[in-house]
Structures are given as structure tokens and as C-alpha cells.
Amino acid sequence: MIYEAQRKHKKIDFHSHIGYFGGWCDVGITPEEMLQVMDDYNIEKTVISTFPARESIEAVDRYPDRLLGAIWVDPADPAARTQVLEAVQEHGFRGIKLHPLFQAFRITDEPVLGIAELARELRVPLMIHTGHPPYSLPWAAAELAERFPDVNIVMIHMGHGNGIYIQSAIDMAIKHPNLYLETSGMPMHTKIRDAYLQVGADRVMFGLDLPFHHPSVEIQKGLVSGLNDAQLEDYYYNNAAKLLGL
Image (cartoon, rainbow, N blue to C red; front, side):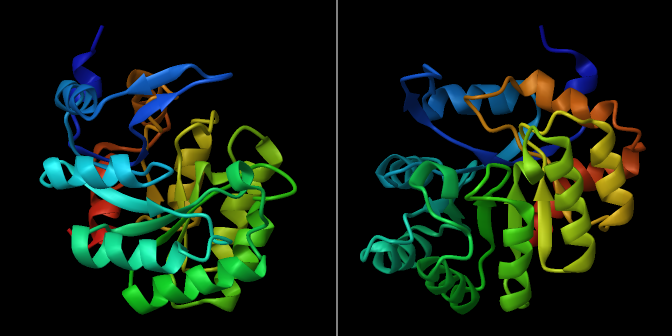
């Protein structure tokens, strides 16, 4: 069931995926199914990433008005730089995605520095999955942000499911104006309002993390967070649009 309140605000989903994910999660979604979800919940655009990137490149090429790309690379792969340049320059991708847990590296490892330099060169945000030790803790994202103050770094999941990491993501973003927060998979609805008020009205963004989470759950967190309608417009749409240059 789709509730009208969940359709009220125009949205940009800052973080989702297409494809099938087997094993422990056993979930999947096609680009066309994603577009239907977007239509159902008043989502204008979605930022997608896949690894490897072929599926997301094909989907962005097919639906450029609705799907935006974040090129997901393994920073240790010698081909990572070429993959990023091709995605951004030839396919219009809007960001770079790193997943330290999935590919078992630390945010501060040497290969990540090269990707951060590339994000600076291309002037695109660097999106980093956060919330899992020892690879992707908020303190490490803050260290990278301090080293690259002119790179916008988005902490995807803003600490994920651990309350200490969630608060730490907020604390680190308060200290570093180039750190942004994305809220998919983060269970504490009150922390959306805390982040909006403490970090900054333009640095907290909505995401679904399809197909891993149900859209109604992620949308509802914002609706019950304590933000008013104008603030929700920032959270659901304006902040992502500004960061992505839309």
C-alpha cells in the first residue's frame, strides 16, 4: 500500500542499485522496476551504482532523464582511474562510489587517496559506504575529508545500524564542512532531524538503497523525523540536487 503522505514531497533517491544480489540477501530489481517504484513514490531521479559498472552504465544510457550514475570502483584495481574517467566523461556519471566493506579496504588506504584526487579533478562527490569496522568508520571518513577539504564526501548510511557510529557520523560532519550524510539503512529517524539542525540544512540527503530496503520504510523515517515541510523539501530533494549540480 502506498500512502499519499509518502508521495507528497518530490524526491531524489541519492543511493540505490540495480541488478540481482544473491547469497544472504536474495534481492534484485531491474531498471524498469526501479522506474515504477520512482513513479509510485514521486521520485524524480535516482543515483545508481553497480559493481561491476556495466549494468549501471547501460541503465543510465537508456534512461538518462531518470537515472544518474555513481561509478563504483575498487580503488586497488589498476583500471579504476580509467573506469571513472570513462563513466564521468563519456556517460555523464555524477559521482564516484566506494564500498570499503564489500572490497575489504580502509577508507584511508593509499589507493583511496588516488580516487579522492580524481574526484577533486573531476569535481564530483565521493560516496563512501560507512558503518562497518574496521573498514568504514566515520572517523576514517573524517580523516579523508580533512586531507581533501575541496572534495565533497558523502557518508552513505551515515554510520548504518550502530548508534555510536551514527552519532559519530554527525559529529564528524559538524567538524568538516565537506562531509555530507545520506540516510538509507540508518534506523534512527530522530537522527535525521539532529543532522539537519546540527550539521547543516544542505548536507543531509534521502536515499532508498533499493533493492535492499522498502521505499515506504525509508520515506517514513523522514516524515516522522520532526522536520517541517520546508525542511523535508531540502532533505528529500534540494540538497541532492544542489550537490549533483542539477
